[in-house]
Figure 1 (cartoon, rainbow, N blue to C red):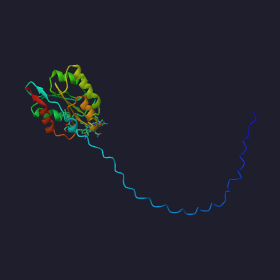
Figure 2: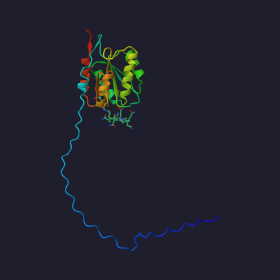
Figure 3: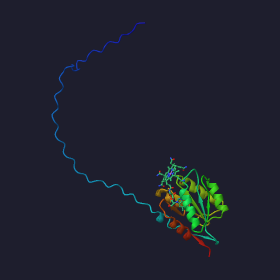
Figure 4: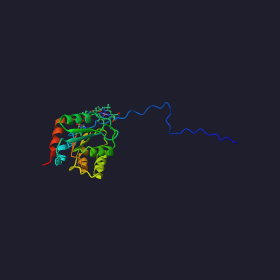
Length: 199
Ligand code: B12
């Protein structure tokens, strides 16, 4: 088979000779005019969302007498139990009857315990970021069992809850959200003010 020889491409006439002198250095450019000083543009100020403002019209429920009964629940895969235990202990020390569910509960498990134990407050401690799923699931499940949130039981949520989620949680039936740094005394006071003896 005939092998086609590739011809060397002919040197272009335009190609500069190897030893050709470099082009003369370009004439120095005129100095750029100094930039006008600009006034710094102010960063948009983010308005802080005030939890007390959003949950201002928090319901008050009445109980038949006896001690206030509080459930502290940990739903889902969240393993952060320090806060839940701190709150459970503070509630016990305040004289409330406390049921702590332990870790890794499903919404249904929390709801069944709340009903069996006839609690006034369902306190959910959520640091996993799954509150927007878990809380509405628990409230829906309570409703299926005939519990009217805000009349029969209060739903409190504590933990890592971005303030941008407060409105949605309020809409789903949460009475109050407590973020890190909240004093336990203010939580106890809140519960006492919102669960009153009947009559
Ligand atoms: C300690 C800690 C851990 C410990 C947990 C030990 C334990 N047994 O609890 C360990 C090292 C195990 C851990 C692991 C992880 N962690 Co971690 N952890 C923390 C840390 C530093 C402090 C949490 C804490 O104990 N605070 C002290 C308690 C007393 O405060 P608190 O729970 O917030 O409770 C207060 C309030 O929130 C409220 N409250 C809380 N619950 C309730 C309930 C009710 C009813 C009420 C009324 C009030 C209330 O009252 C309390 C008093 O003010 C936080 C950062 C932070 N600054 O919060 C990260 C943090 C929670 N962890 C985080 C992460 C990502 C993890 C891991 C996924 C990390 C990883 N990749 O492995 C794992 C997950 C483990 C798991 N299985 O879930 C993130 C969560 C991010 C998010 N949700 O968007 C955080 C916020 C750190 C961060 N800035 O990124 N963690």
